[in-house]
Length: 430
Image (cartoon, rainbow, N blue to C red; front, top):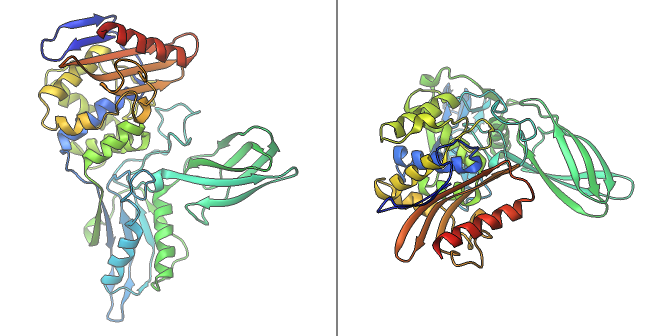
């Protein structure tokens, strides 16, 4: 741990501050701080609607329509109020181009990020879960399906898949019982996941599982919407592009832009959204290469902070969200990062606004609640099994302080650890 006065650099408390620990979601502090400084707080992701081939005089496209992903994690996202018009705008752009029939495919192009399927840096138990959908350059609907099920005494039935699709063919091996418990198994890019578990009797239950191939779902959904809008699509299937080819032969019809990055990182840190963090992190690799990889993204982040005098060589970053057990960072680095973002950063206000307020909102709504520091700390939390971390800013008696407390491999229950950290911080200041 480390607690320091921002202006005077006086240390209020310190313990093993240069020893690396698992940061969990504190890694999002590093990802979002780097992104807003490199890309600017007004940066917007762009998703392009393109075509190849020729549009004839009778409004037939002899070619393909492409949805070319630009890394935007917010397309049709449940967390962004303005994200729900991507499909409608895309259909409108295709119609405005004079296309009434497509003699070809609608293709989802996710080739901006090099994709390996499920990230190899993550634990098997996390892969494909509702909190860790596989990132993609063409992400859609938070890369999550919502499956609604209902059980009676003798059977379990699947009532609805949202977003609706005919691509998903789940094998349902549920039993009716008292308590909800389930797991899913599948291979990368497979549309035939196998579900097993127990569904409570006479209750409607919704479970979330990852979309195995978001680019394909986006293309299939657009195909169906085009047909509904009266634009014929001859092909009965859609395709996924895993490598850049023939991009110079495409014509741009429309670019759909995300909200500004300052709004995206606020959602990332308030809700601790792993998909948002991973896409933002991957995009940083494009500062160095034309196709993003995790290693290149980590190199870009490390180089940026080394150039600014921070001890980034001691940071081991395996992903952007903090989900990987391979991440290792120390409290001293986080303190130096937070001081930089408070005193030297060009986009300090946007970064600061991205942090939730302890005792009031976000993932720290309960942290420090009912204590003297409630409402006075702007904090990012980080937690996973046997890990509980907090880092951020505290405003107390007209002074700003930065703090980082990282507890790994604790004994006992999480609630006790959280309470003890709160007691420690309140004790320091009061």
